[in-house]
Image (tube, rainbow, N blue to C red; front, side, top):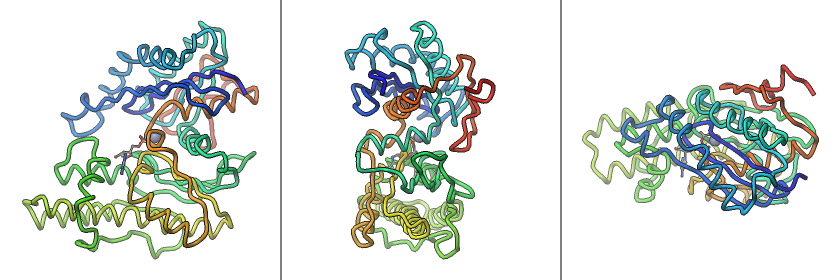
Length: 345
Ligand code: KG4
Ligand code: ZN
């Protein structure tokens, strides 16, 4: 395993850099959030995200190196998210990473964003070993994968419309909560009664392992409209009832996936893995049904670069490196790496 690897992640609205030792030990993890940039618009504005990344990338990378106490010439390689994500945002981190790799004459390796999210769970707990089921729940993804040690991930099911994090963000907006909506909604939900509204658990009774969140979102929109103007009490009840429906469906899908795959280990990663209700309900299901559930620590659930450095370190350890003209890709199925296409090893 290469000793010091720098990771860079800029696929959405966070500019992040981190240094990881031996693929596991996080020496630093700097995350520059853009909350104040996007808050006036109630959501991420891609053009503003990439412009702000250009402004902060070098200082975030410097901060990560400084906090780790690692000089840049001690780096064994640089791992950078090459996709999926917002193309302008991705390009800033990728170009910076490639340029730094060129200057230091060290290998650069492109990492799939979801490979990074799963690596966060793996480095947090060494007992998480393949094969396992990975549930990726974020602002852009809601999908179940079977993860094998030496084979590409197999997609078991995914959302047919909105991602669960996106549903949290949209419902938060409906309720007048500030961006970023997911964590704000989860906080308001703590004061609410989750049985107050009987929102649908979409697809719960349908076969397969796909998800759907647009019907739930519409049901919430109708309830909010009927009660307008919503007071604090109703707002908390709607938030709690939505959160219960949104997370119950994840739990029932996980249980089915584990049963179908004959596996007793699931890792839950991505921003929504920080959700307290999901963590507790899935934890209880795991005790009852005797499977193990792995969540990364909260700071490694949402986007960060330690997860990219950890995933990249393993690729570097296998002797992989990517050409310095590798490109970024906004849509990339997990398990593929189109940035390698032009320059096979
Ligand atoms: O993984 P992530 O940081 O970025 C993406 O790759 O999308 O995930 C961000 C998503 C957002 O939709 C955010 O609202 C949601 O994760 N999120 C939460 C919580 N914390 C973040 N959703 C529910 N409960 C939370 N505590
Ligand atoms: Zn993410």
